[in-house]
Length: 497
Image (cartoon, rainbow, N blue to C red; front, top):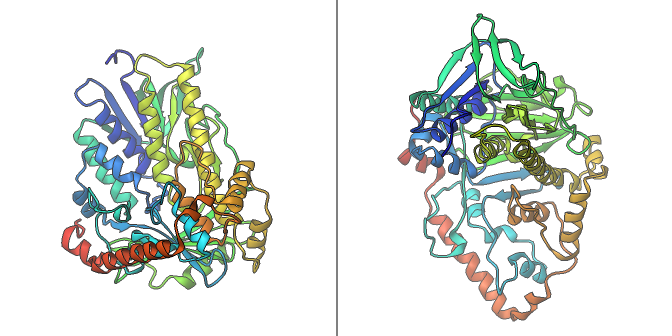
C-alpha cells in the first residue's frame, strides 16, 4: 500500500469521538510509519452522556481486537437488547424495539403479513429478544443458533467517560501522542485554505496533513474555521434541549433502555453497573429548562448529581470533509439520542474515513462521495426518528399535538403510506435500521396495514395457527430458561475500576 504522502494526522478533541478515531487510526497504521496526535484540554468538558449504543459497537470493538469482557468490566457496562417505549402511542401503552427479527418468513413472505391476516396484535410474542427483556434476562446469542428464532443482536450501556479512557489507553499503547492544551489559533494555507497547523495557548505549534475535528457542537475546524454549514431539522425533530442527571444503580438493571414520553419530549433511563443515567430530551418551544429539570427530578429517585443542561440543533453538517479536515461525532452533526445513534455515527464516520483515506493526497471526488454518504445516512436515521413522533395518537399536550400534525419529509410520507396500504417496508440502502426495526415502531404506534400479501393465504389457517403456537412456545420456553441479567453480569463481567 502506497502511503508516502498523508501519514501525519492531528485529532482535535478527545471524548468518545476523539479516542475512537485515535484508536482506529492507530490500528489502521499498525506496522507502518505514521504520526497520530490528539490535542485536548482537560478544562473543556465533553457532553459525556452517550451511554447507550446499538449492536454495531460490537463490530467496532472487535475491529480493534478488544476483548468483550475486559471492555465491559472497564466501562461498567450492562447489556442492551433494545429499547422500551412507554406512553408514546398513548399514555399507558408501551412497545419494544428489539435488536432482533420478529418470527421468520414463511414461503418467502414476511412474518407480519401472517399476523395481519389473522388480525392479531401480539407481534412481540414472536421475538426472543423481547421475551428475554420482559423477564429481565440475558443470554449471549449462539454463534450457530439451532433456529432462526434464536438469532438476535445486543449492544451495551456504558460509562462514556470510562470508554474514552479505555480507548485512550489502547491508542497510547499503540503510539498515539496526546497533547494537553487549548487551541488559540488555526493556521491555513494562503492559497488552498487547507489547515496547516494549530497554535496552542502554551505557544506550541502542532502541524499535520489531515485534521480530524472532534471538537463537539462548536466544530472548531469544520465550522468555525472552514464554514461548512449546518442544516436545521428542528421542523421535523423539534426537541432541541436536554437535561441529564445520574442516579443510584438499579437493584435489577434492565437489559434495555427505557424511553418514556413526557409532556414536551421524552425521558431516558439507562442502567449501568454502578449507576443509572437519566435525562429529559425536550423542545424549548414547549417547555422551559427549569420546568424540564423539575419534571426529571420528580421522576428520578436518589439523584447523585445536579442536573446538567445541553442545547443542540438536530441536523447534519452540510459537509463533513472540507479540504483536509474531516469531522466526526457532534462536530459532524447531531440527531437526538432517541435511538442511540450518536456513537454509531462516530463509528460509521470513521469507516468512511478509512475507506476513503487520502493515502496519496486529497481528491475532490473522494470528498464528494463521503459527503453524499454522510447526508444519505443522516436522512435515513432522521426519517426513522421522525416516525416515532409523527405516528403518535397523543393529543394531551401542545407538543404532541404539534408532532401529530407537523409535515414530514416526502421520503417518510412514502414509507408510511406503503406500509399502511400493504405492509411493505421500504429500505433505501444502506439503512441504519433493518426492516424489523421499522416494523417494531409501525406496529407499536398502532399502524396496521389495510392489506396483507395475498401469498400469505396459501398457508391453511389450521396449519398457520399451529406453527404460530409452536413458535411462541419455543420462544417462551427458551427465554424462561435464561439467566437473569444481573446474575449474568455478576458471573461473567462484573466491573473493575
